[in-house]
Image 1 (cartoon, helix red, strand yellow):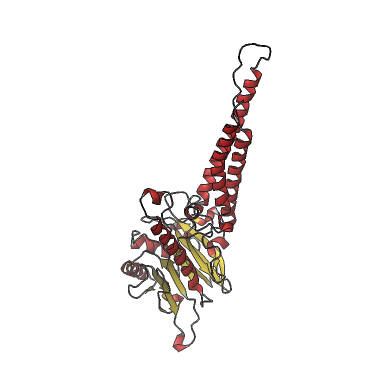
Image 2 (cartoon, rainbow, N blue to C red):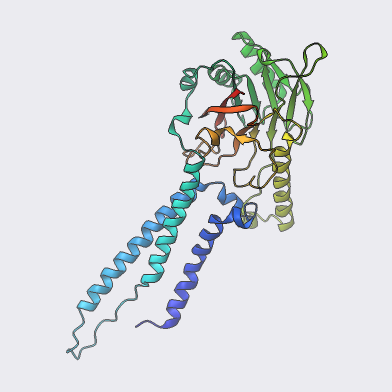
Length: 377
């Protein structure tokens, strides 16, 4: 028989993954969605589900194999023999079974959350697929694409806009000169667009294109750092009738611990980076304030978990509403189930009804393009 302290030590070791799984599962409820590294891990629920499923399989094999080994040892014991029998190996059935069940529950929980937000396979589209989805009367199509500092060639962006029949285009990390190049290519193709902002400002190179046939717009400046706004112009000085459009690009989350510790980043710097991330995400959502007929889109650098509890004016996520909110938009090097859904398009449900949405992979960027189609009510 093994000593009691061995079992105690085994439970102490087992408590580490159990506590980690519990913290990730209940992070939004406990207010840990912005804590480092819980917030960064929570962004990849699909990856957590995959790792949890693999762990459940391994712990299950441990439970079954240890049981068979112990049974063989018990059968080999001869109570009448004076020879010393081999010691019966410990199997820790409660620990292995507990870990297996906890890992399985973790996998089911995270995968269930993603499924609830939407894992429609038809949403993973190509440019050819988009071209086969014509826009109906009264519908508006919005595109959001982080071009990773204009690494996506302008002709590719123009092809995306044309295939999607987009009316509004949000382009984080796209300098004005590149947005103008895209506009010129679209003009050659037969459709004119307006480009905002009209000059480089505090937009963190977040550009915005609006189709001329969508209405006349003027620059609304930069409501927050990393954002560009376009406001409708009323005909003949009358009241504006179009939606206010805001393209956003929030500050990214900090380097997760313990990588920040390994890189030698001071704790104060990591905390300041986290605070800036949370503040900019909240400010980006708050751009809806006073814009009852608005559309907001771009790279929020935050998932639905991170924005939980933040003021959003009741706006709805078009991807979630149309069954595609669980797919990851970054990074595109991994399967969308394993990525983080940080690019989104939000609309006022009082004026817009979500119709459909798609995710498209393009060369030159680590983000997937998000395409949303809504209908005016």
